[in-house]
Length: 233
Ligand SMILES: [Zn+2]
Image 1 (cartoon, protein in one colour):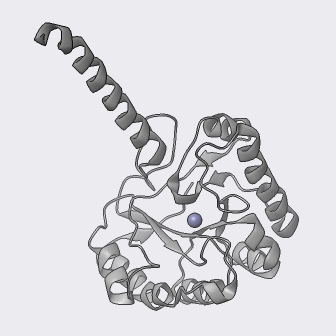
Image 2 (spheres, rainbow, N blue to C red):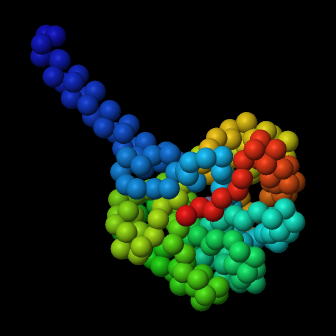
């Protein structure tokens, strides 16, 4: 009885392990198991600041803080938001920040066809280039979710997948918690994920005021800990 069951148990164990590895490779923000991704801003006491889901009505405030403190960041914009606020896209570029691609409509990419994923990427590439004159080379998938075909599409376009290492859940907590969660996780090469928008939601549904309140203290805290801000590329 046991002898008969053993192969089945082994097969079941192998299947569960393979599924676990697959889920890790497709969703963990530090995983490069299934394809290349930027998961660190490099060696040394340097960190990168990144903002997703903009531009929104909070982006100007973020840019003001960055300018006042002389920090450059990467903004992973959604194409739909970029078209709504082209002036902010141009300001991001004019003030020396990097523009990245965060899809057109912020969907989960899993179970999507390669063609649908290509559409999300290219429509955003075209919009950002038309507005700012620059075609992004960095791509960050919504929710960090990757799917089959994505790596090929990025390679064909000469783009790099950029993930993150510190996520203080800035849409969920108050400013002191966002600051503490970020600063307590600092490490060489850390990529900090903040949000200057909320997917492609409209202004009334977007509240990033706690992140904006935390931002000056995060920048000052990073420097106080002996770190510098580097670019994500
Ligand atoms: Zn996002």
